[in-house]
Amino acid sequence: MSERLGNLVHAALLLLVAAAIAFLSTRYAVVADWSRERSASLGEASVAMLQSLDAPVEVISYARRQGGLRKVVADFVDRYRRVKPDLSLRFVDPDEDPGAMRAAGVNVDGEMEIRYKDRRERLKVLGEAEFSSTLLRLSRARERIVAFLEGEGERQPLGKANADLGQFVGALAERGLRAVPLPLANVGKVPENTDLVVIADPQVAVPDAVAAELVDYLDRGGALLWLAEPDEAAGLDGLAAALGLRLLPGTLVDGSGQALGLGDPSFVALTAYPPHAITRDFALTTLFPQPVALARLSQSRWDAQPILRSSEKSWNETGTIPKAGEAGDTIRQDADAGEIPGPLDLGFALTRVSPRPDRREQRAVVIGDGDFLSNSFLGNGGNREFGQRVFDWLLGDDAQIAIADRVAADRTLDFTQAQLSALGLVFLIGLPLLLAGCGTWIAWRRRRGGAPDARR
Image (cartoon, rainbow, N blue to C red; front, side):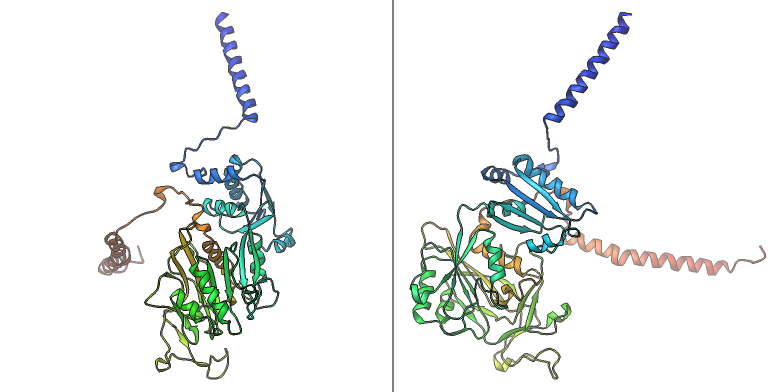
């Protein structure tokens, strides 16, 4: 009897312990990451960044109810919510509320919008590096001042005309950047609090005093973005020389665009990019209408790295470019006219040691086109994303966070060239020959044996 009582007591205690554990599990959460290289948890840099945020973060995911996308997004955001409990996630179904997507400027299922204080930014790639970098940009302690040169017919940063940059600059404002006009002809000097100066295609000759101040601004260590065009207005030759670059005559044309359905060769579409911090992991197609090709000078104080390059089917056309569909619309490269065969560069990122004591590196970018960021062409492919990458790099945001998406080491296979060649010989030559030999041998055996007797 005592043994039976002891068993009952033992069972009751086990039930009480199980009930206590179940109750405590509803009050306290214990999370352990047993994955290899802790790839299911945030890195130290992301954790430190989240702990520095002093306001709630709202994440809006535009994902349909069907499929498993919402669960993937929720599991990913939970990593951040465990560190920052006031980070919220809300889903919007694009089919049920298309107006919300249009208001947010979102047109891709699965895209997210991250809001922090009075700033917001869109995110298309779901990864720790991208998500944490976005949060860090939104948490800037102060606005970045981007001054747009005006007074010589440049594209208006807040304008709504097709050639203006209003839509793109509006997106920059949501990321903590403030665009201001810079009438150098009146003020005479770039203000000291300017983080970046943008030259967006002057339509009239730039006065000598303005051009001299732009060169002096570079000499003082300022960051510069120059969006040039074919037949650029006079007055900026000295600036180009100070940057160690030259604008080639004519308009860059590229015949490779026909494969993408472009009938006008002066519309250059790029799908591959030279390696650089701006183009790292960038796989979207960009469109540059009627750009100008650039060339590096042999003597320069800048380290100029190409970021945009045309195909081998390109050249700088100095003659008249016929419109698509016109009779006799074929154009060819004319070496006698000074036309240079491609590949040609239409974008450079330039760096050098900064003359300013508070900065380590000075940066500038020159792109032979301004239309790709205009209201008319901003929505083409990755134009908006590429422009944002250029501004982020010029403002030094690429160096603010160093987070790499950590994946299991056994998710990739590394082969030497000899091993790849051996695999190619086996599967592309050896295996087909073996199958063909087996078929020939079977056919030969059947012919030797004769046709089977139908009476059997």
